[in-house]
Length: 393
Image 1 (tube, rainbow, N blue to C red):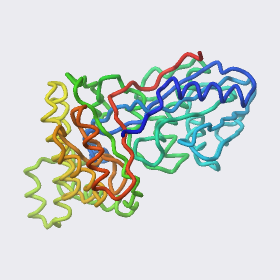
Image 2: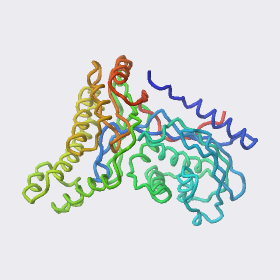
Image 3: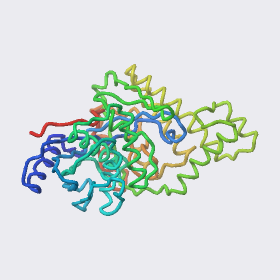
Image 4: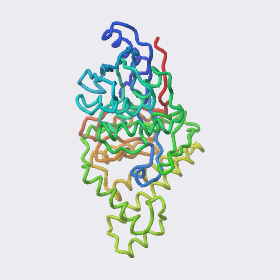
């Protein structure tokens, strides 16, 4: 069976009750921000291409209250965030705040430092249903939830959601040392129920894509629980091959390169590996835009075909799949009612996403349990809302 995702009210109640227990008073503000899954558009972000994520029903909740001091105390009441429970820091001089232990609090500190308005100290509790290490963006959910909480307690919202997402991304860059792209923060800020989000990673423009006639279909996320084996050097090799190819062609990025120019690259001595990397990125951008159009038309057969082609290219051209992910994908594809299945995220571990008819979910789970030797977890997901303030009842 699929995992029972704690609903928003359960996660909110955990946060509110934990705050009362820890601080002896009731929280005055409560917010949430979701994790995300990428439907299609992998390794296109750093090539100024397109991605098509959706927000998940899994959320990070922060409940808290200003404390009229310059001290911030935040407690994790969720194993999904960290096993270390408490962080405390002084905001008298926000420029003096530095990363440290516990590591999870660095995402919070980064948001506090980057918050553009005046700020008071606060007490807060974090709870979450977003699994850590599964490639479902638990870090962005924490960042965006923190930023939304700061907006709430100061009554100073950042009007531009793009600015908010970029400031959260900067928090991860500066305080967690993770050179992440912009997709995770954008979808956590801007997610909309029933919609995916087409994000242009070049100009930061977004289009909300309503998923027409989704009623009979769901997305099944399968966590391989296989450790990520894509090292930073392997990631850089792929990224640098793309950058070098663009340079050879005299282009700013692969966004400006056409499929026909692959032949030009070959004539200029590009390796087979480089040609394959470029082939994946160019076709993945085309697939992502085609998936947007198919979603708008309610053509889920077409979306499934594009997801399958994406995985095959990630496996063969970009070489970021793994035996574990291939087993999950192939097992899912063998079941009637499955329209498409692919790895989602950077690859070599993490999750797959499968588009299927709702009545086929149990058969897919059974099939994977028969064929996969690892310990997979399953989550049923429909496109959900982005960050928002909640009532404290």
